[in-house]
Amino acid sequence: MMRTRLLLALAFAAMNAASAGTIAFTPPDSGLTSSHDAGNPVNLGLSFTANANFSVDALGFYRDPSLVSGQTVSLWDHAGNLLAQTNVSLSDPLIGNYYWKSITPVALVSGQQYRVSTFVGPNPWTFGGAPTADPRITYGSYWYKYNAAVQFPTDTAGASGSYYGPNFTIAAATVPDAGAGWAGWGLAAAGAALLRRPIKGSGRPIKGSGRCSLLIFHFSGRTPLRSEGPKRWGLLLSVPVSLLGIEPHFFSP
Image (cartoon, rainbow, N blue to C red):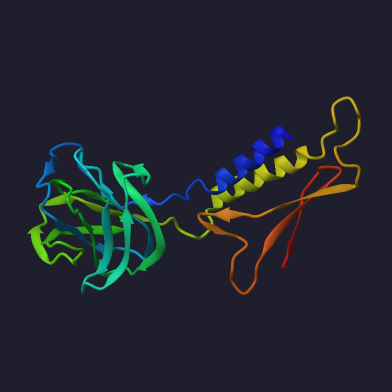
């Protein structure tokens, strides 16, 4: 059973191997100035153009070495309409030197311009050269607005550098990944086969029935095959005693 659980765990890991969100902006390795302008509240923003249709599923802010509190991170369209906002704390996950909080996915449209910003509050902040951007976006310029509360940043500082600053993650595609998916099904099938192996020393299978069935759901990215659409489909793997093959049976609950 331990091997069965391991193989099933590997199956789901393989099927979700490409599911993690991708960080949009990556700072340069050197040349950053940190701990700047503490105690002077400002909204720091980065503008970008979407090169593809995708969803934003987390917002975050950069870990300056002298932070004293969390920050409010916002996503806006080019006209200043708020699309998403969340309060990110210093206890939230730290990945890629950014603190992150998940949000309800927001769909962005290819060819449209957007802006992501963070209200630093009493915190200092970091600035430096322009970031490396994910291929699905084109970095535009960096913006600011000094204010005592969250506000859409409308004063531009140019395009040669960047604030660090706000960031976001691009959600993994919800279409199945063929390679990961088939690898996952193969491992799941192997795990199901182990359920029919004889108990050591008994000469009997674990279950005495003519066949055993394993109910599993195929996950690709964050979207399970069993969806909330008009039809909910699961996959029932029925493993014959001969173990010469696997008979898949789809059903609709």
